[in-house]
Every structure is written in structure tokens, then in C-alpha cells.
Image 1 (cartoon, protein in one colour):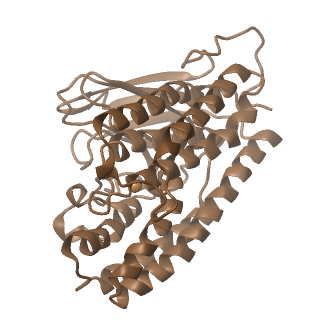
Image 2 (tube, helix red, strand yellow):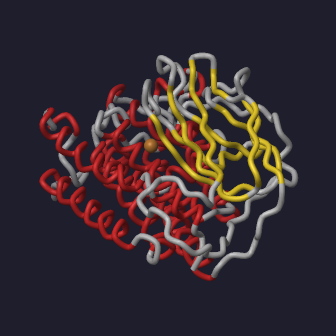
Length: 383
Ligand SMILES: [Cu+2]
């Protein structure tokens, strides 16, 4: 979530997205493979200079993106953008690591960004040709199901942020602290969608080291005031801005175009969130309510997978079952840390190395299987 305002490199006009309905082409494909013959395979390499290739092209349709890091870890993410909207991304690909995501793209030019600041090193992906734009009823249903979850959570975010903001403006530290976790939960469930809207996610949810000091606002700025500074002095405008940004998110979610494969990508991103910022205690470094966010990320990931699972019911029912079991295992691993009192979990500080290792293991097992889903959804968006 380290993003400076995006360069308006490409006009957004006419660059849309379509979900693709691929006719079943007979024969069996290896259902556990992350790639398929029906999708275009594109590999990008992160180096310390940026990303390679700088110019790429593909036929319109489903594309599986593989990202490898050959650098020293200077750049660790790759984003595909349509104007200012991030259509797909993979974050936290550390030195020597690999990651993947999939998208269905129609004709147009897309920006490929590997460095968080944009600028030199930004590439172009040229997509040519036509794609079938009809959507199967099941794809429509998957998207509609997830959309209602999104709207439910942005509604809840608005409802829970309001009293929190009011407490901050009133200078009521105890009340603001008490209301903080409930406002965080709906956001953490749907964070990848918020991340797709340019700098809206950093405005709401940036950590102190993610942005310029002058731009540090949102939830975590107030969290710092509440728990570290012990004073809400100067926080009223920050709180008002948070409320406005949350309202903007709610508006944008209502109009967002979604592909089934993006929902699957989002499920993966939520698990990356867990392993990089919750298991490390980074996200809620002042309040230490990281396990609250942890569970919210997992819940959001599960709902996303459940929405698209019917699209894999025929191609790989076994994987769907395994993923469900792995989700249950993750919830079971969290259970010992649940409490009746605020905030509903023990604080991060109370966890020792063995605890976090065990939690990480469950997430890693699940993440490995979830990473197989987007490519399958992209190639087989069929009823
Ligand atoms: Cu977050």
C-alpha cells in the first residue's frame, strides 16, 4: 500500500474489461496446473532496474501472469493498470520468489508497473484482437454474490466508522479505542477491491512507513494518536477525512466492474496481507489488534473463493474441497486466541514465536492451494 498518485500515462477511454466465456474444448487438462493451454502465459521479471519486458503483447482473452524476482528485492510487486485502476497485481514477491495472477483483458493498452513509484521502468502491455463478451449465468451469479458481500461490507464500514469518527472528534479516547476494531473489520475483509482504486487504500489504511509523513492519515494515524501519543489533539480533521474517504469507497464499489478471476486474485491477495502484515504485527503496531484483522482477511478470502467455487465445480471439485478444509484449519488455529473481551482476540504482543509460526503454517498451506485458483477461473469461466 505504498502508492504515490498514479501518473496518467494511459487514457482510460475505451479500455474496458470483459469476462470471457470459453467454450469447453474437450480433452482433459491437468486441473492442478497453474497454467493452461487456453490462456496466454506472460512472464515478467523484477530486477533492480524495474521490470522486464518493458513492452509486452498478448491476444485478447485470459492471461496468466507469472512474476519472478531476479533482483535483490528492491522491487517486489507487479501491477496491471487500466488508467488509474489496478486490474490485477501481485505484491510481496521477494528476492528469488515467484507469484502469479490472472486476468481477462480486451483490446487496448495497459500499463505494467513494477515499482511502487511508477516512473521509469514502467512498461506497456498491448492487447489486440476480439474476445467473446457473453457471460454465463454462473459467472454472472458469482460476480453478483461477491458484489453483494462488497456492498454489505462497505455499508458496515460506513456504519462503524461514523461513531468512531465522532468519538475522535469529541476527544473521547476510551470510546474511540473501544470502537476502533469494529471499524477495521469490514475494511480488512474487502481490502483488495479498495486497493484497486488508486490511492484510496493508502488514504484509508496506510501504515506510517508506507507514505510521506505529510500524507500519513486514515485509520493508522488515529491508531497512533490513541495508543502511542495518548492524545487526540489535531485528529479531528484526520477523522473527518477518513469518513469522507470511506464514503468515497462506498460510492466507488457500487460502480466497480468485476471479473470472476479478479475475485479469485483478491482471495490470494488477502492471504498475502495476512502473512506480510498480520503475522508480523505490522498492521496494528500501536493497538496490537492484528488478530482481528487476520480473521477479517481470512473471512474475506473465503467469501471470495466461495463466490467463484461453482466455476470450478466441474473442473476441480477436489481442490475446492481441500481449500474449504484448509480454511477450517485456519479458523481452528485462531480459536485458542479468541477472547470474550475487547477486542475479541489476545493482543499481538502476547503471541510468542511458536504461536506465530503455527498461524503462518496454516496460512501458507491454504495460500499454496488458493494460488491455483485464478488461472483455472480465467481459462474456464464457463457454467
Ligand atoms: Cu490493511
